[in-house]
Image 1 (tube, rainbow, N blue to C red):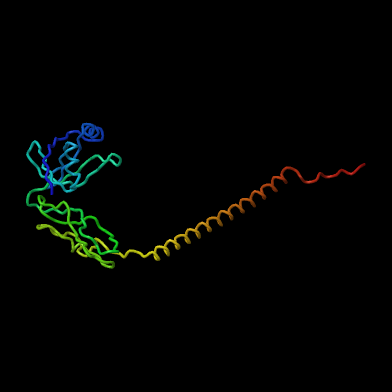
Image 2 (tube, rainbow, N blue to C red):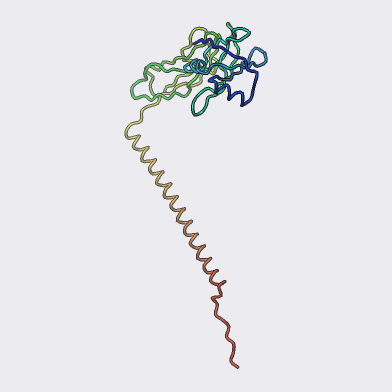
Length: 239
């Protein structure tokens, strides 16, 4: 894992306005939790923090504060949905020798057997390790795997000092057969048939609605004709 030393300035103002001012100064508002202490509020340099978290979501940070260095790990990261810049980060305080539980990315290595489709169902693994020795990823070898098989969390290679912290039988990746040309053509024909059936049903519904609308308009016309006095006038007998 990577370790980054970063200057932490204490924050005394809170709310949307002060947070906006911090971001305009190219800094990021953060809150530090942990060890039963009250949350501590800091602002960190945005560029350095972004680089630290870019390739390792579990980067170990050494916060250089007025009261001394403090080790911390990211707990929650909020990014701008458009610019992808850091908006806010929650950190958790840790100590050397302390065991923590985190999620780390799973990297597949090797190649499955020919004509085998690889379906990765889980992209991270929950593990426990020393806070200062967390892996930035774990590896799962899929070499030679054939259709009908799967690999579970128990089969992921873990670095020394790292233990699995989730169901060992949880499926990480499944292997499927590549469909034949005949199977693809059959699936395409079935999809086209379903689409045609759906369109025909929609057209029938539209035609029925149009017919009902026409009958309704005809009825309204007859009623308007009666109201306009189209009935023959009564005759008055000659004297």
